[in-house]
Image (cartoon, rainbow, N blue to C red; front, side):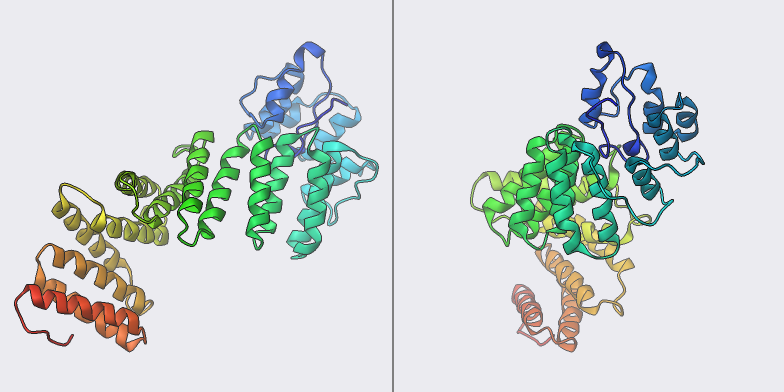
Length: 388
């Protein structure tokens, strides 16, 4: 058997397949496959593998030659209806494709083969909500794969980080270690997940937010793109914008970052449409409208008008009965934009309704903030302070 094998590096069933040995002059293709590069040209003996990567599983199955153990294994992985086979990898594949309920023991397997079986054992524990049992198994899998298949080890480290996300420092360490050894498409997803974890635990810390931004930028550089990964792209762009917006304004470059944040939100909205992703669309639109109110610009009125229009769009789909406090926040934000435009009567109407909703739903701090805006509008209109 050719070693190492790209087991687990690609999505199933390609990630289940074994490559037969070929002439040494043709083995260079293995380097690309071990990095997770699905575009690597492969020798004719591995054409079945390339077909599996494209999703053409019937053709892949037909292209598997021979009756040796590797060919039998690959036919099982590609869905052939064969008799039970006794070796560990065949049993592992049967479990992976749902033909048995339990993964096999790793037995005497070594390196990436052992890591692959251990990964399946950890997967079963996760599916049964036995997360504590899965963690040491995944650690053992990482150790087994590290030398023979760094790309597989990196993906396993990513899974381990997700399991140990309740220990942020440890999870970040796993992601960083994975990024040191990954050398293929997995780097993009690992960078994205590291950025999310850093941002979730930044608590306004500028250094942590800058590190999250760098992780998001790395994810874009490593391959997350609008055309190939639209949902990941939109999530990344929205999070990148929020990281920039959460940073304290301390340097001249921060104004530029505000502009980048607005553009990132617009990029996210290329994916998050009202029809297909209504919740994400509303949330991202709200972030955009809020950012437009405060971004330094030579044309503030244009931004404020756009913000008011966006708030109107969101209010048309957000129902007051389902989330009265969230609805009131929208009204308050829109009232603030209207007040800055000098459109005082509608602003007073909206902030008054927001104030009442905050009062009715026991949000005294928000109610006090709304009352401050009422008083500010009254002053600008030259009227005595009235109650909302």
